[in-house]
Length: 251
Image (cartoon, rainbow, N blue to C red):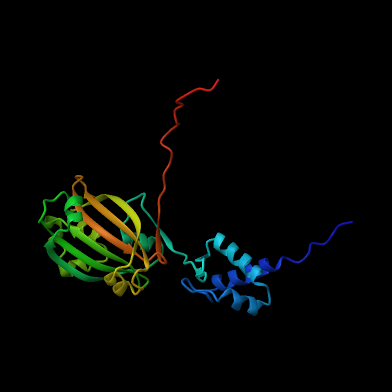
């Protein structure tokens, strides 16, 4: 005698409804969900059932937050690869996004200690600093703070710093930026970051510090870029270099 399958557990039905609200855009990226008590009341289920559903959606990567903070819808952030040297504008176009920018500063200034170290310059050397707000589909996505050695930076006067892609602009002038070393970490938004990116002071940002080299291997740019993690993240591909040699033998 075969038994008929029973109805799905309540938390599965609730998961499906919450997932639908996210996928249809009713709850957009960055939206904080109602409280457990509110969801329990709306759907007529226990708070334990609500917690089960929310836990499953967190495990799927659709939500983040917890421990006293309301769950928040995680964005479908686009991954920017670091395995190849790909300019921001080119990457955005490959993702069918419209890249944009606003140049906030282009000036000759004394290099910071970090820039001097990365660019192998003596203390007190001058560089051309570029500060730009980078956009994706018209939304602020990243703050780009770049320091160029003078013989490269001289091409980046105010009008030229407004180009969509500095890498492409310099390439047209015979300056090929061919490789980069990246360091990625998390940082809290400073007062200036928060004002320009439209977030709260202390909000989490993804920071990419990058030293870029020309075709001759000379460091020509040091950049400190700060991304909104709701709009983009980074992906890295690697592989094992070869078989791991055995260092011992068991009898």
